[in-house]
Each structure stands twice: as C-alpha cells, then as structure tokens.
Length: 242
Length: 119
Image 1 (cartoon, rainbow over the protein chains, first blue to last red):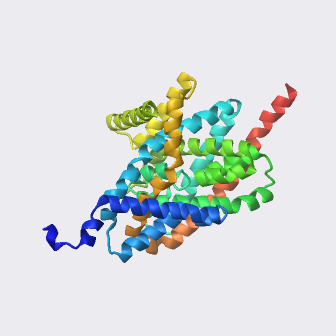
Image 2 (cartoon, rainbow over the protein chains, first blue to last red):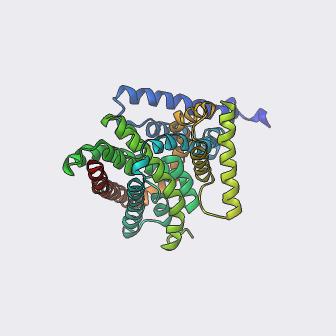
Image 3 (cartoon, each protein chain N blue to C red):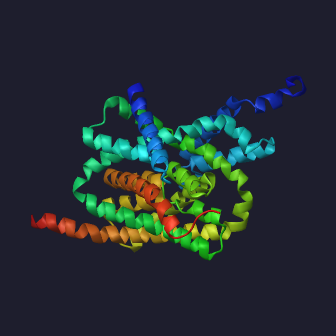
C-alpha cells in the first residue's frame, strides 16, 4: 500500500510536518511583526493563517489533514483559557475598590458588542452561522472559538472575526479617545480591553501600566461574562442554529 | 511547573465535568477558569509553580490560535456570501461598543473619585 504512495504523499500525511510548518510560519510572522513596529495590521496570527492557507491550497492538502498535526496546538487552548484566571486574579486584587463600576462597565460593553454585531448582521440578511460566529467577536480568541462552536457557529470564522475586531479597536482608539475627551488611563485601558480583547490590552500598555492592568482585567471579565451569558441570551432571542 | 500544570488541567477537567453534568451551553474551559479564579481568591495567592505553568501557556496563546484560524479556508463560500454584513457588523459594533464603554466608565468613576476627595 505505502509502496504506491510517493514520499511526498506519505510525508503530507505525517502529523509532525504540519506542526513544523505552523511553528516555522508563526516564528517568521512574529519576526515580521516585530520589524514592522508591532502593527495590528500585520498581527502574527493573521499573517500565519494566511500563509498556511495559501500553502495548503498550493500543495492540495485539506484542512482535516492539516489538523491531524495542528490539533495538538489547538488542544493547548483549553488549559490556556483556564490559566487566564491568574492575570485576572492579579488584576482583581489591584482594583478591589472599583469592582462594582468595573463589573457594570464590562457587562454593558459585552452586551453592546454582542447585540450590535448580531443585530447588524441579521438586518443585512447574513446566514445564521455567520450571525452565531459574529456574536462572541469582542471576546479573546480562545474563548470566542469555544463559544462560537457551542452556539452552532464556526469557531474558525469567529477566530478571524475576533482578530479583525481587535485590529479595528486599536486603530480607532487614538482618535476616539481624543474625540470623547477620555484622558484617564484606567478608562482608556478598560475600554480597550472590553472592545478589543487581548490586542486592545497589548495596545493599552502604550498608555502605561495602569491602562494595561485595567485592560487585562476588562478582557478577562468580558470573556468570562460573555461565555456564560451569551448562550442563554441567544436562546432567549430565538437566534439559534437549525 | 508540573504541580501548576496539574492544577490547571484539573480545573479544566472539573469544568468539563460540570458542563456535562449540568448540561449547560458554556465552554468547559471557561468554567475551569472560573473555578481556578475562585480557588485563587479563596487561597489568597498564586503559588510559584502555578504561575510558571500559567504564564508559559499564555505566552504561546497566539500560536495556539493559528490552527483554528486556518479553518477559515473551509468557510470561503460563507464569507463570500456575507462579507458585506460581516464588515458592517464588525465596524459598527466595535465603534458602538468602544463609545458606550468609554462614556459609561467615565460616568461611573466620577462619584468614586469625588467620594475619595471628601473622605
């Protein structure tokens, strides 16, 4: 059987090949991003997934075959989500006095994000799977992927939409803060964390450590709140797959 | 490092078990994260082994997202059909969320700092 397959066909079926490719492409993309001043437009994840998709199409390898190796990296997402509790705990301890306004702000922001995205997509006549993949778009990618899959959307589509949301949030931030006259680094950071998740948090550190801490906190709270509430909200609104 | 990894994986396992037992539509890992958060609040500190394992995982989180992102390649038809709805939804929703959160937080923090001044 294997005698009839070329060396390439056997290698393409070996899971380790796609691990090597993913790691190498990601390292190159991170290097490129660093050279370009860490611009959100050339986010290493966006560059990596684009390059790998083109590569797979060129050598005619399916996503399922690619995932036989890459699933190992995807599996680590679960423990990484659990580990988000650590920075969340660190930041919570720092802002204990402000907890109530922060919780209110995070809930309002998370609901606004999900409902406005779902509302616009429904009005534009988007497919229900698109709508369900859009719903968690303001949440950090690993949580958004899991939430979209649970809702009946596509986790991978959600991952892409989350990254675009993050880039948009970072690009809008300087002008919006000026327009709305927001100078407080805590408010700036929190807003970035709610609306642009981890990419917003990375960006918030440019406004200082306080903005970064508030942003990380906002990202964690928004992620947890959305993951727990969104599935029920979608059922309540009758927006479900199938 | 290993004790930390065991704690993290155990929280995830407990989360997955709870989700299955209660039949709730929430990702098991997120429930695991909330369990770990409660545990940390109860215990009062992050033990060094847990911090090492957690920070190690989070450092490489972007790399873990790549395989899911590559999955976009099987949804090109859906994206081609809905690209306008998707673009508008992302743009408007990000803008609205940003403005609502910023203005609300600016409003909410005011009584807080005024209170501190009077104290």
